[in-house]
Each structure stands twice: as structure tokens, then as C-alpha cells.
Length: 202
Image (cartoon, rainbow, N blue to C red; front, side):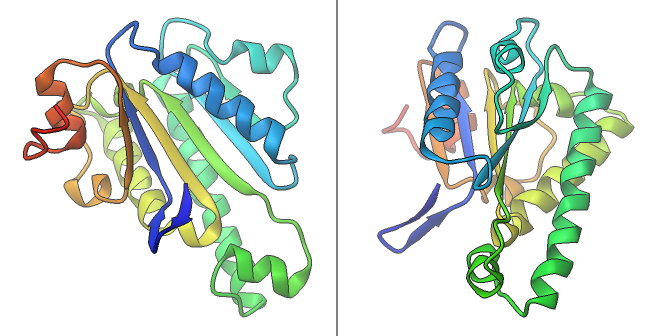
């Protein structure tokens, strides 16, 4: 996540079937962030929709970077986390505007204040978006908003799933996820994660 070789990637998708190592990669990602950056630089929202307790260790250890740790989450709680992030996005918009700053980096430089980047990590995020109900509708709209506008305000999404098929999110929003990592997965799932024309990757 960040800028490299003229390309900018603000959000990431992580896919793979059960047993492919997705949870291990999430742990490596979270642990690497926590040992590289201070809580003043990065705060984490960790939401787990699996029946397991992948993120429980961070609650048990009181990880200082973790602003939210949701284990075996209900869909309604996941939506409340999204609403909190959207409210924070609006708050940061006012802060940047008052400092006449184009983005988070410029805000930090102009004010000397530490406004941490926020990373929302959701395992099995499709659970939020597979029902035909109000939770799916609202969650989809907020995820799209965060994907489109989050970069400027230092808000980043890392979404994991075993399957992206049937997920109720627009192609425009999916297009915001420039970083995509697919571990072992059926060919049809690879196409849903990387695009139907990406046959070489499959």
C-alpha cells in the first residue's frame, strides 16, 4: 500500500480457499505493521466474520494499534464499524480543509500533528454483502465511499474472502483495489478476484 514506480495503491483484496494461508498472511501483515509503525502512525480496525477467532489474540494482548477488534461479528456490528469510519472520514475532511492540506501527508507536514492512518481489515467481508437486505445496501454504499475517498484522508481497506462471487459491490468500487493477492483458489474464483480476462494468473 502506497506509491511505487508511479503507481498508487490504497486498498487491497486477499483471496484464497480454506487452508490456503489467508489467515497466516493476515497475521504477518498485522504483526509487520505493528512492529514497523507506532500507534500514532497506524490504527487498526480488525473485523472477523469467520466462525473462528482469528483476531482474538490481538484483543488478549491488548494490541495498542487496535482501535476496534471484532470477533465472530454480527453483520450489524460490521455496519456500525463502517459508519464510524465514514464519520471519521468526514471529520478528517474538515481538518484537512481547515489546514488547507490536499491529503494526510500534507496535513501532517503543515500542522506537525500526528493523525494516524486507519486500516480496516475484514476477514470474510462478503458476509456483509451477500444478503438482499438493508445491511448489505448500506454496507455496500459505505465501502464504495471509503474505497473512493479514503486514500486522501489516510483510510485504507484490506478485505479478505474465500469467494468474491455474488458479492454486492460495484465494479467501480472493486476497481479501487489495485493490490490483489490470491492464494490457492478454484479457477472460477480466481477470475472473480482478478478479472475474467486474467487467465494467465489463473
